[in-house]
Image (cartoon, rainbow, N blue to C red; front, side, top):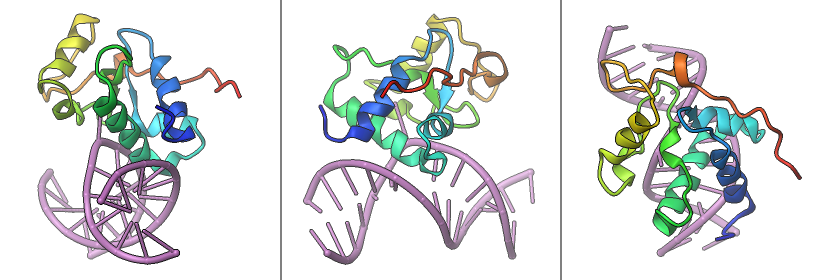
Amino acid sequence: MERGHFFSRVWDVVAQIPPGRVTTYGHIAEHLGVKRSARAVGYALNAVARSDDGPLALPCHRVVNRFGALTGRLHFETPDVMEERLRAEGVAFTEDGCVDLARHLWIPEAPVES
DNA sequence: AACGTGACTGCCC
DNA sequence: CGGGCAGCCACGT
């Protein structure tokens, strides 16, 4: 699992996202002090998705892009899983199929214990 | 060690 | 308004 310290840090933040809330790759990156590396964040989730999908129980479905679009839905078992899980948590979507960030955006406040 | 790839973002044309 | 280019970070080959 420890393929890199960075991954663990990302997973730790994702694990803190409360149900019914979502955050963006950019916010996670910013929280980690590397605002310009939102890509690496997505890469970390891609890695965890390939590694494990259930047991880890990492709420990767609560991570969306800056517009609230479910850019990573194709990485789930089925393209609908991501939206289904969010809706199940009471997350509202816009006509465009994007998460209503104005209502559900969550920004990591808790500092990474280190 | 170098190159290519990616669940991103922002700026420029 | 839409599409394209560049920047940044980490990882696999």
